[in-house]
Length: 143
Image (tube, rainbow, N blue to C red; front, side, top):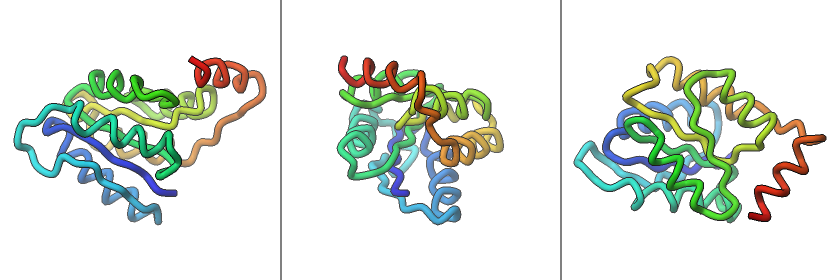
C-alpha cells in the first residue's frame, strides 16, 4: 500500500517513527510534512494527506498532532475522508472493520509510542467487513 502522512510540529516525532514502521512493513510513504518540530499550523499539512487518500493517489492516510483531535477534524472536512481518531488497537480495528476508515489520526502527546505503533499495525492490516456496514459508508460518502 501507499500511505500518505501529514502532521504538525506536535506530531512530528511520532510521524517519523510511524514512517519507519510503515516502510519496514513493505509499504510506500508519501510524506506531506511537516518536516521538523518548528511550530506550524496543521491545516496546511493534514488536508493534503487526506485528499491523497480520497483521490486514490495513496491507499490510506495517517495524520498526527498533539492530541489528534484537530487533525481528525481537518481531515474529515475533506469530502470522502473517513478519519478515525484512535487511541488503542481495538478502536483502530473497529474503525476499519465497521467504518472503513481511510484516514487514521494519532495524538503524540496522549498515546504512548508503543501503543501508537501497534495501532498503526492493526489499522493497516484490518479489512472492512462490508455487509450491514456498507450502507452506512455509502451514506457517509454521499454527505
